[in-house]
Length: 362
Ligand SMILES: [Zn+2]
Image (cartoon, rainbow, N blue to C red; front, side, top):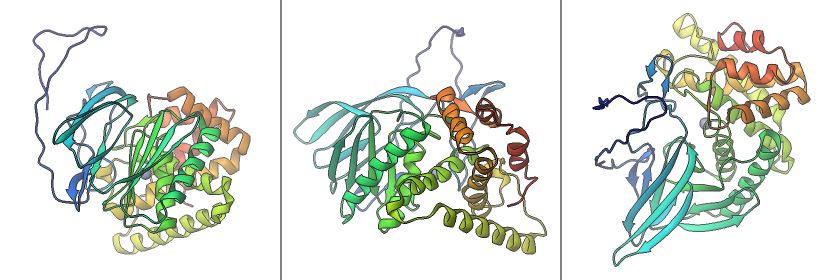
């Protein structure tokens, strides 16, 4: 949607735009949809295109990946829902007004790239207050909700220590009907209620890592998905490495990703004659979900692992801290990624370029 303002706006001026719209919820277990007593309200409202060199960036939808790109902004959202529903939403609930048949909640969140919520009549809620955040887990029928809460607390602690302070005061982990393992929104994550305990922990940790990579440090997820997905996936490995009681070995994750990626290249080459190896590709430049998944969830974490082994732990983690602190609530591309590691004393340019452009194979 584009609109022309009556009067032009100078860089220091503001314009207010009011958009009236209604959404019909599809009956499905997607980011946006309603099913089995859950309402998933993700990616549901018109959002301002990112303004960058060349003008407003127009997002193209894709059936795979997260085809979204937005700048951080402050949100105040009021939600009026039938009284029997509980609400999980991004940020803090700052007021609640109970009417005869409905309840009005007002939520606020600052520096958020999006605003999502989940409603259900079936939610139980656990709450744990920690120094960096209040953690809530929303679930209907989950025998391991306490373990998920403990894992989320450990993830907040581990990532806070390795990358920098958690950027939002609240975190909601929401079990809902969802076709994939999970989905990240600022301070709120979906986890599929169909997952068993180990997979649910792993999905929750991956989505929580996205609070640093995607929510705080933004990137164009249509063109550089390898940055946030690669970092979120590698952070999941770091979680297991730093929390050995879960019994998942980092080395085994790396070996599994390496053989998975090699098997993919082998199979793909036999069918198509050649396989694309560049990590940095637009969603529309992948042949489909299989190639996308292998590239960003296997290839990109292997790039970060190789970098770490090349430069050593001290400089690698200093680089991740730089990436976070220098770009919190901003947007990064390949240049900023390279710069963060260079500022930590690593000559990372050639290495990252060769992976991003597909000149290396694991
Ligand atoms: Zn992810």
